[in-house]
Length: 189
Image (tube, rainbow, N blue to C red; front, side):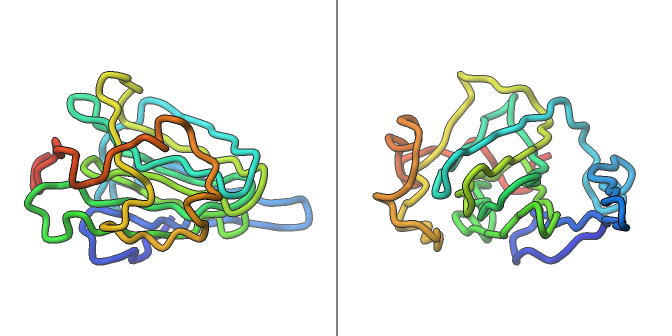
């Protein structure tokens, strides 16, 4: 498991698990608490989530949970591909409102660690895409928040027109980033 540089945003980790392949298939260690600790992340994951999106152009995001249920997420794709995006919401951060985007796919086998203090979202690039992610806190509906995925001030280069996106009603009605109050402070925890 190695770490790649994602962006200038402190805290994000683009991870490349090793995959050993032969005529039978492959073997990969997709999670190791010790190896992540060696890379600088040591909080325990408590839940695994699995999402299937039937259509290409399905958008999920931009989501975050507020404390005390704020979540770190370790995201990977087991079928298909996504453009995975994290936006810095840490008040006082020199990169507040900036984002990083990486393509995660079953083919490239890469992962993105999205720490507490970031909003997270993705768009599927292929039909029948499956995303698996580990989280460090349980889902808490009263602490679930987000902002509009296509907010022009954030300027994410989504590979889909807003009118073509497959969205939940919640994501379609999300406020703009300027209309939310971030519960995160740069340098905390």
